[in-house]
Length: 163
Image (tube, rainbow, N blue to C red; front, side, top):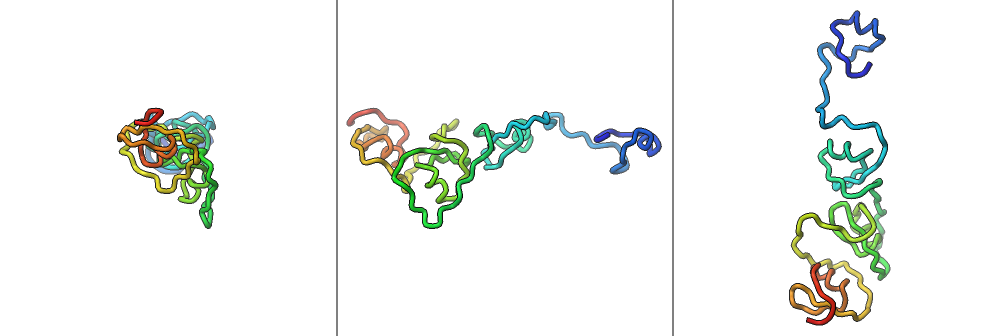
């Protein structure tokens, strides 16, 4: 009987229990007793956990349902010019799975990351955008050729059309 404390060796033997150590059993913290239900989640640390409770007990923030997906690192890192965003476990949006693989990122989910906290704009010099003229006006007051180009410049807030 796992995790049970017996008053002596005789009582443990009568119960058919194997004594692992003398003394009282250490109880797990109540917040870290998780159900034995396999429903994998991906933590922000890039690790797959058996369920959300296990992730929480490990102190990991769940960023997606299902196992984390790791893209193999491409040796030459030549990626197609296709914008199909994926969200990395680090909260970074990559232009496509190949770009995530080039930096060894673990993919949390398909689609751009949704940030809970505002992140300061950072240009992504590895962006590949379609050559389509559909201008947007960035929150920085600059005109970008399309929303992809604005996002690559680190501008997340923009309106359709010229400034």
